[in-house]
Image 1 (spheres, one colour):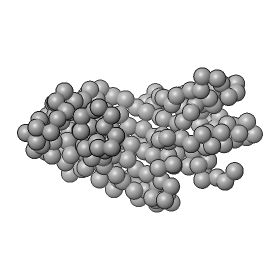
Image 2 (cartoon, rainbow, N blue to C red; image 1 turned 60 degrees about the horizontal axis):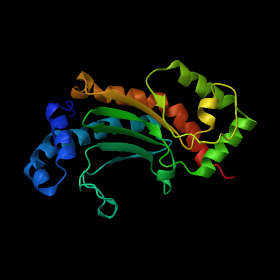
Image 3 (cartoon, rainbow, N blue to C red; image 1 turned 60 degrees about the vertical axis):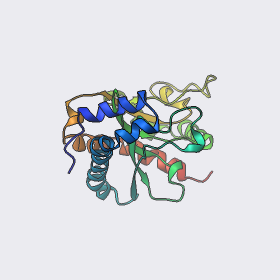
Image 4 (cartoon, one colour; image 1 turned 90 degrees about the horizontal axis):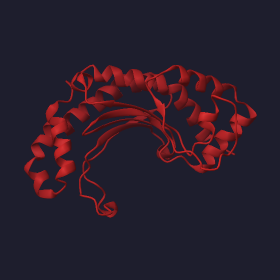
Length: 221
């Protein structure tokens, strides 16, 4: 049962960021197992067990990240990650091209949200055509997003706008992708079992956006 992360969780993540080498990790591996990996897996499992049955139409699969970086992609960095996450993705062959729900923890805090990583240019072009031709549903979603203060829209924008729709659609239209993120500093919630409920509630609030962009991704041009 997830009881919350703890101060040792953040201490380990700071440690691996500042001492990203095998000798340090091996000397502190039990701390990683006890204070990072175990609670992360517990959180992921409880969120999945609570959230996935509500959305059996998808269906969802859960994945927890490993601390080891891909040796083929180190690019001068150390062999370990100082941020770990879990994701809920649609169990489909092309699941990584569909919207993903995620939670991440790092030394200075944690975050959770939904996005397309990466968003295919064809999908975003399809999104712009949909907004041009029938903006109603996205307009409702954009207006609802403006009224909340939990998430922000983070995706990179094109330097040369693709178009100029009226607010609030202008905040979405020229994005290269979709990234809805809630970022929090280290706080009492991180160290509490109530984090399960917060993440489930947050994911539920993102489902209208998840359904909208899943449909766009799966639509044939």
